[in-house]
Length: 474
Image (cartoon, rainbow, N blue to C red; front, top):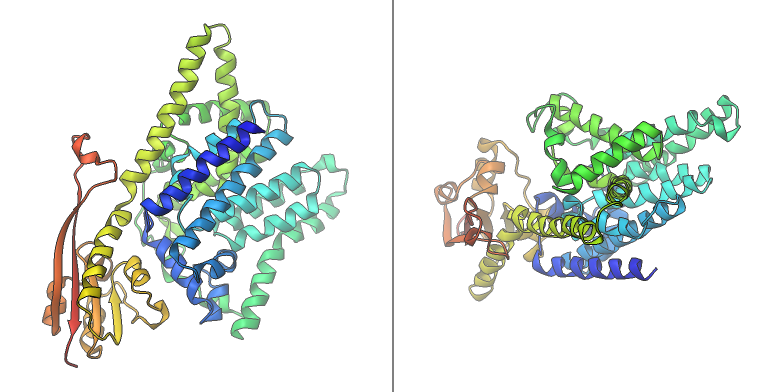
């Protein structure tokens, strides 16, 4: 157990450090999830919203009142508990070197990146592994009841619950007649039923979930474009790790061939096929992100551990220093790649430094603010604004220009040169043309904490320009 607690302590320290080093998220979704969780106390409908997800909002709404950092620390705790439960699952199943699975869990680059952010994938991973442990212990009904909560954490939870139903229906070894298994599978709908009931009670709309469905999740809209069929194969280094991906694939092939850990391998393969199809056709707003697979990170970690054990067995006839060099080298490269992945991917985390700098200037040069517009969620966070009181911008330029023009005097616009034009089709010139006074514009060259531009030839600092505009007349 010493190795288990030591591993957890190391990654807990890393997670807390990342909360401090990266105060925002690598995507805008992290900040929006936090803002909506905090705002749920003002608008209870957010507790049952489709995009923010009920389980996430329920867990994070309280900590969100203490601030963004406190909410991010909840994710650190969630991933630590998930890593521990993954170890217990591996140990329950008699997997050799079970304590190593904690490192293999966190060294998945996408897991390491999200372990200190307010995204929904880590919470689904926790529900998934707890349900798996119950199932492995023979507690099928409690396992299904927990698994039914997966749909409350992320959209993938629906498909994982369907897969769970297949496991139960195919479980002839349970000794129960098929019709009894069909009846038992209904327990997997518990979470969805509770969601629908809660939504009805809170909103008075029995079809609230349908009416709240995000417009960019249309089944065939391809709002984020499409990708090739090999999208996730190419992203495997981001999912399992650039070197551990080969260990993972070796473990997956062997387990499938021998029919071992069928629940873990089928979950991995199902999600891989599902997201490949969604991305290939652009269905359900699929954007091709590697982070989707954090949802099943416990399964990926255990499959990778099985591949690791196969590798160690294949090295059994070599000198001890060769074994240590190979395994130690794999772990060292994995640590470096995970750290670099976080530091290189966090564009918005870099922008947070510029946002705080601009916010500091505004504190020194205050103006009375009646309304607020912002292009990045972290701007709203540092200004402690209510996201529900912010005018709703869309991706339609003409509508946004009309909205900007009719806002009252005292409106502060906190804008940037990247997200603002790409998401809302508005530039700094548009605000001046709409009668806003330019309070400040500053240019930034934002490098990672590791100063990658100094030693990675093709890597350049992120160019960014921040603006503060103020409307002095109606």
